[in-house]
Length: 207
Image 1 (tube, one colour):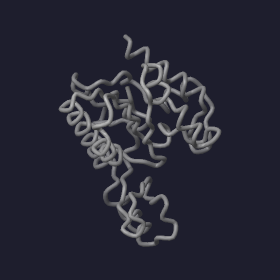
Image 2 (cartoon, rainbow, N blue to C red):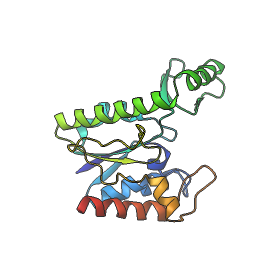
Image 3 (cartoon, one colour):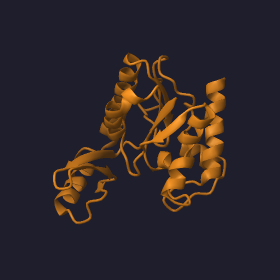
């Protein structure tokens, strides 16, 4: 059985030995393997919750389980007509568009006018609910995990009981920091942290 992995750089295992190693050893991949699934990693470094829902819509017919590693509230993606690709945007920076002044200017304006706390929490909430409801209609299991920056209204939201959240009191980044795992300057962790967090989530699923 195949598990679809969705998320950002944390789910992609960024800044481990190399990209391939990271993708094969990120916490959702290790979790899927320990649950007896073959993991297919579609996580995007700098990726958004919008991208996660889009990829789920495109790929859901191929999978029986999804591990959705939800990301930051100040992210979105843009369709670039020049490259015919979706480009992730994080903190107002359009990744992969260093030579596109038009997109970078749009990113700055979006960060000021759209990437606010309230709008960001609303957008993340929308994507989480939409993915889970669509998955339920297709009998696809979803394991929801926050990599970082959970939805706060003003406290962490209580999701419907029909949605599976093995860990609700922390995020991957918060947990790894609390456990004193080292991280890079960009906030990424090595395999030891990913492996330990996968075990932590698995115990909560088993419980």
